[in-house]
Length: 224
Image (cartoon, rainbow, N blue to C red; front, side, top):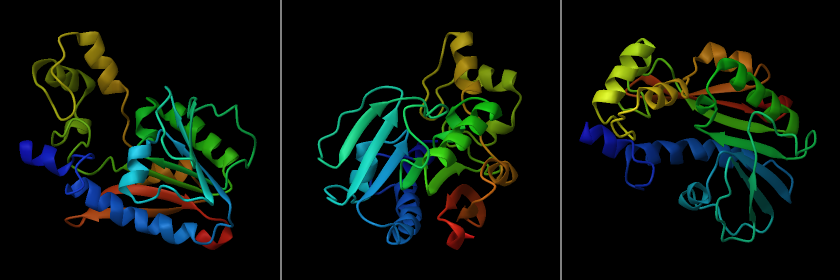
């Protein structure tokens, strides 16, 4: 399990997770070349650290707004932090951003109804979008890092979380808290991503021939 944890460490530039993320980001950078400058990007649930690791700071003609449930610190002039809810972007107008970006966030909003609301808001406020999420059918659950964890019944998952430290979660003594943690994550299938983003192209990222994650991206008619 320690090997899996090291491979999945998003804060280690040498980890498999970061290498895959950098490869995926190359697609985003290629697409971004066609966006007129100055460009406004909304990152739903994002961090400045992510953009630092991707080598994407101090870009004078690209402004990135980080939206989270809580304020995050920024230190670059082209970054702004705002507090908000990805399922209700009421503070933004239609098409206000050139691009809406979101990396491994939509699986954290709890229910499919909430995922639909987030997808609708992304498509409303963004002229283009790039939304990534783990694949439900990949055998290693990316948060608890336990093989097949997400395929188990909720009661079995709660039992595991209350008896063991799994992935990025320490063992929980409170059953109610464990149930909230388990039910707060809902991984998506490719069919569900197509339903959420009907106008998008779906890119499948593979690891050992297995689909590890999906990215739905829309760049106007040319992205089809």
